[in-house]
Image 1: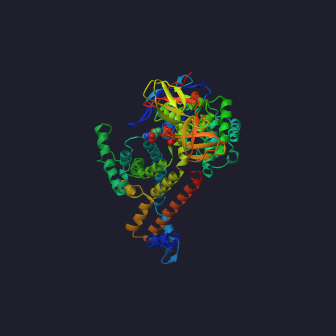
Image 2: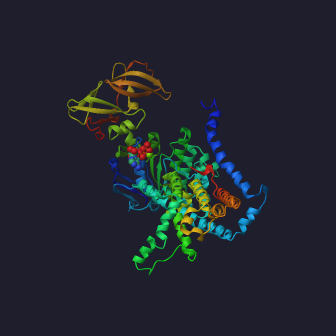
Image 3: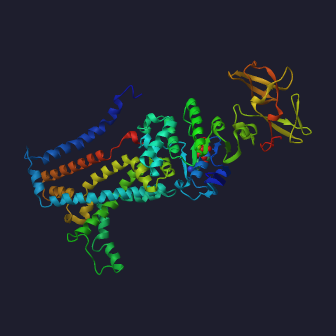
Length: 350
Length: 283
Ligand SMILES: Nc1ncnc2c1ncn2[C@@H]1O[C@H](COP(=O)(O)OP(=O)(O)OP(=O)(O)O)[C@@H](O)[C@H]1O
Ligand SMILES: [Mg+2]
């Protein structure tokens, strides 16, 4: 019902192109994150969907109806603003109730909905207060509650949890997901926190420089990044990229031979740091370890492979000294091959 | 730095305090004493003279009527103009600049401008005659045409005094982040609801300042009235001026001055009470 089609949206501010041909389809009830670094155009896209900004060209359809020329209130959506936009002259209660009041809901329904939303976001103790007396995180939760209270078909959220402490963020994340899933709300969630995007989303759209670089489930995007940017942006530590010469359609990495989708020249292999295993003495691909950091749950190694910087993860049970050279075994199924020229990855081997 | 020498701010404002004290408080006390004394002894004689004067009732009535007519219109116009300007992308500064031109003109000059428009041989009559709407010159500014005179004076006052209100209100509107209006819009508020439920409450401080300033100035209206209506339209300050200059009676003039001050103070108190500004409820 409330599926969203973003069709070839472009947006320029003067000579600056903030969005370059963005297209994305979001299914009814789906939770999609827009993930990307600061300034890549996430807020701009969200504002265009909401109708607060006019696109230079392109179309937005919600529930198979073009909404591009409709004012925000006729698009049937709610939004959480990046800077909250909680009304300072209204109590928290009236803030949360605002959307319902605009819909002329009766007091009983307003009360019920406000209490439900406030309970979910743990803001009941502040309902009678004015937002000025609240912390950034508390205000942010008021903004989320205000959007949830109207039970919208489409919910747009612009970094709604960015100001919460780690523990509360984790808790809110789980609760948000549960509630939105139960209500079947179609959600677009803007964040630059990849863990948040991975944890919450049905699909992630990775935005870079005004373009969507890849759309996919968290696992797809993580395991098979479409571009070098995606691999480097997602994952902690980020994906390692190592350039190798290709001879006769094969690459020799350490003692292993890999068939690659190129016949000659060079190729880049993308290596997820946690997909390696320690090889028996003197075998595998050598890594010169500069720093070994025991993180408790795992061991983080920083150094170089074939003279190119790399970070890998070994089980916490391994011991490696700074300056030591370790041999690594790679899992061919979990490697990503990329073109050194375009930075785009080759399709995953079947 | 200044924490070690807390007297510095006091020392710096001392000259202005002394200056204001000498040039404001002293004359104020003198004026009040002049108004409530007769030959050096306390007396209400001046007040009695003032109140029993033939023009007193009319000047009070005229001043209040003019204030009641002019101030609300100015506030509404300034709000409208300010909201319109806020929606513009280009040319804002130019338009604001044009709108504030009347600010640079003294009130007497403003009166003269409107006199040249409204007098018998003025532009208004020329245009009306040119369009064939009137047969011969019509007088608008005499005691026989009180309504036209009142409207003429009100229009001149509105023309002259709206800019200051608008500047205060535009400054207030600029303080309201656009996200508040956008959030309201998303949640279904109509433009009018956004204005009344979001914008107006958030510009309360500016609105309060504008109302106080404009109302106090309206009670002090004089030069424009004098230029357009002379004594055909008595107002409080005009009466004070006449008692001072024509009748050379400084005591009754002082009584008028005190009356104007009391009215202004009362109006200010009413506004402060009526439009409460709670810093807790501002952005
Ligand atoms: N009104 C505007 N006028 C001119 N440039 C703008 C405007 N709004 C945004 N931009 C530019 O467009 C680009 C994208 O901005 P946007 O706010 O969408 O980024 P974002 O992805 O939300 O970043 P962040 O994570 O920091 O919030 C930025 O380079 C920004 O400077
Ligand atoms: Mg943003």
